[in-house]
Length: 159
Picture 1 (tube, rainbow, N blue to C red):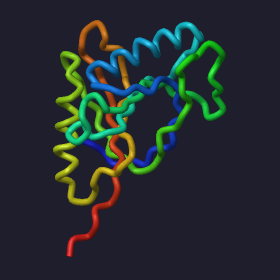
Picture 2 (cartoon, rainbow, N blue to C red):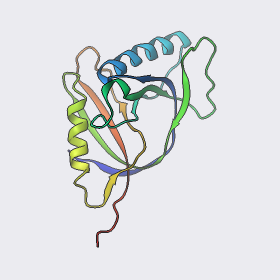
Picture 3 (spheres, rainbow, N blue to C red):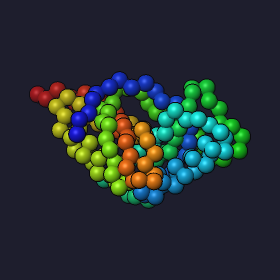
Picture 4 (tube, rainbow, N blue to C red):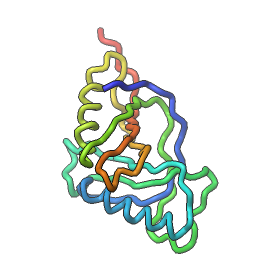
């Protein structure tokens, strides 16, 4: 898998924060998000899922994620938006990979990305949320095009 190291600006986002197994909460979160976007007649330029935990360390019932749309920095949550949070995804240095997800299997490309990234000679994952930006709606076909973002920092120089 090819990835690039990029300097990424802060992303201002609004949506839903959820806790539980990602295979359940992400789908549920996007259903809530789509309903809210339609109800509020918003026109999002980006749909994003953010992941706040390491699934190899945190038990599934405690995994945190957020389903989000990108908004302007001055966005205010409209009335009748119960549960909607306004937040920002940190800017900085990220490893970014564009991939195709088949059969709604998001875990396989994420694991492949981390496996490759952990072998990088210069960068290592940083302790900030990872996220994915959707390039298409694969809900009918199970095939998605996504950009995966993993925050990275320089590896300490080996002695």
